[in-house]
Amino acid sequence: MFRVARLALPLPLLVALTAAAACSGDPAEEATATAVPEPTYETQRVLAPIESAEIVVGESNPPQYFVQLTSGLPSGCARFDENTIERDGKTLTITVWNTEPAPGEEIACTAIYGFLDHNIALGSDFQPGETYTVRVNDKTLRLVAQGGTIPIEPTATPQITLQRVLAPIEGVSISVAESFPEQYFLAVTVGLPNGCVEFDNFEVSRQAQLVFVTVWNLEPSQPVPCTQQYRTQVVNVPLGSDFERGGKVYSVMVNDKQVDLVTAGGTSSGGTGSTVVESEGEVGVSKEMRIGDAVTFGTNGAKIQFLEVSEDSRCPSDVVCVQAGSATILIGISGAGQFPSLFELSLDSGNEASASTFFGGFKITLEVLDPYPVSTVQTAEADYVVTLLVTAQ
Image (cartoon, rainbow, N blue to C red; front, side):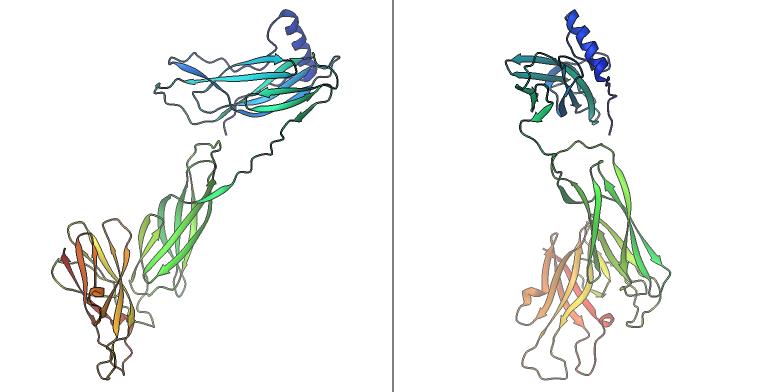
């Protein structure tokens, strides 16, 4: 964090300088801001934020008392103006003033928080053993003559609490380890918007061919001075190896960024290894799709992806059943550049409406799910073919 240069003199020398200043009638204020050109815009006086304040006693007879304080300059346009001291009996009031652009002045200011140190002489006119109150803007100190300082209301250092927030994602890349089965990893470039923000952790979840990665940062839950420096950090996220080989496409969502993971290798031992197909569909024309296939439709680049068969309890064709049963599939539908929304469509003789859903002015209907069950055949996931019909509402 930027910090204004400090000026601090040894107390014996400070006492001597203060005494000389008192004899000449000059104000006993030691630290001043570095001279800067006068601004060309209108300014207003405001109370300076006080970062710290304490009373110290000089080694002299009678004792000389001083307030050592640090004031803040909240932006590049904030300037130290002056300190004033008033005394009313046993109460001393020190007011530290800054100037800043007046309301209505359109001034570009750097977001850098600066600091300025002050040594303010209070003099020696204090009765031994008596207690005095010293107020410095919004802070209050107690001065016990010849005894140092005791805070009137001790204020503990504020505990900065942190909260989790979604991290901005600057980039995502996918890598594959040379192993069998292949291990997949994400290299996620995480944004850290200022000096108070730090990376926290990530969470990975999955539903069929959709992989969700949530990346979290930690930031203060209350306003605190922070350096306005945008940083990035690369985080490696392991996705594992539980992906069907042979060019299958999985959608990976990292916060608000989407990337496609295309699996490597040939046919896996547990399936047919059919390749995912992305094609264009025509509104009003039925379209056949296998699991993982995607089809775009309409003029806005909307896309449907067949994700999985959630249930197939249809009565086999070679068996007499009391109930016909049903079949349910899961599809993802997304607009251009959007992450898919999930929908279930069902073939159920008792509820025809469950076979359709609506998205972006279109109606998507499940017409057929092949093959139809046979009691002597176990249908593999890769063998399913769905027929969908997209119509305008």
